Length: 97
Image 1 (cartoon, rainbow, N blue to C red):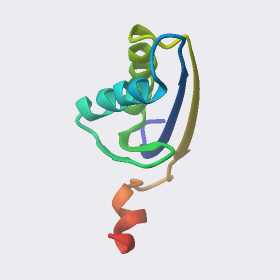
Image 2: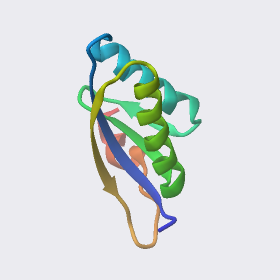
Image 3: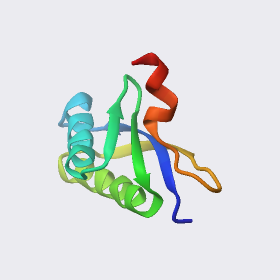
């Protein structure tokens, strides 16, 4: 699958030494640095781009959280894909902006 997709990524870190929101900020920083289009929402961050590239980001997000003090992560992923066209954030959100 090499489609251009939307992925909703929610990371819920647990740590004995670091605040949850600080670890979430670390995760969002990885997404920001990816260069892909994204939208931070209250419960998850939506990323748009090639499937393989986003899955690489999902892995890097987890690595970054562990490196920065997470002891455990709950990671929830939702994927929207289409057979013959791109899925974009703007397609779904334009009427609300």
